[in-house]
Length: 136
Image (cartoon, rainbow, N blue to C red; front, side, top):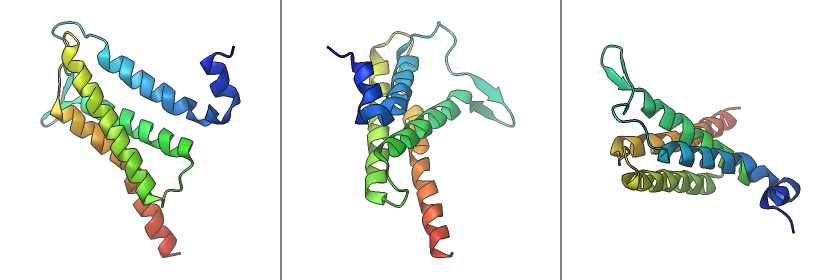
């Protein structure tokens, strides 16, 4: 009997390991209860900025990029890339919903928006590559 990890390392699913690891780390870090009173970390520049918003964008951008790489999509495959953006955004919404049952965690529409913005970064690169290709 093969272990699932061994099958992933040997078969055609090997390219999905980074996506799985990224999704798993996002899930685990999102459902771990945080100590009371240590909610959103704020930085005061000219106005208050929630640092975790940038972490959400970075995490979901990384997840979208690893999924696109695993699917071996060209960056001009817009339809498939939009499906990836929607899937990653739905994954983020699911985690936000899951956080409602975790003590000291809660649902945040700002976090969901940051997740979607992070996932959408894959489209920005695709559009720039397409425009660059047209003018070369």
